[in-house]
Amino acid sequence: MPVAIVLINTEIGSENEVAQILSKIEGVKEVYEVYGIYDIVVKVEAQTHEALREIIINRIRRIPKVKSTTTMLVIEGRVVG
Image (cartoon, rainbow, N blue to C red; front, top):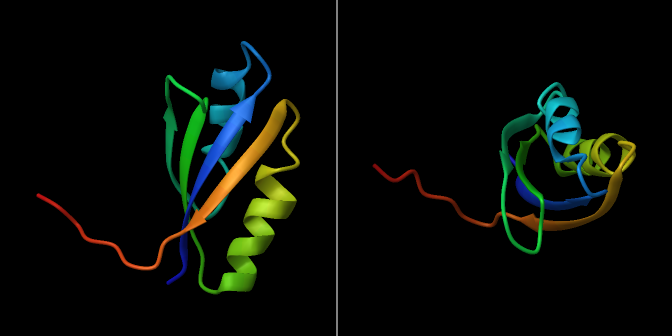
């Protein structure tokens, strides 16, 4: 199953609002508000790479107050603990 980590920059002060919208999108599995260069980190899963692309481009990147995104496609993952 394709997985991506999406790093998101939002307009100042809108992190919580954007995080709430993200948490309602099908395929978004984890949402973290973070300190640092990015404001939010999201884990996204989909059945196909095309479906993953659709979620990122047509759902996440079109959220009002999302300024920019950086997407990292996962090539291998491990569950720890």
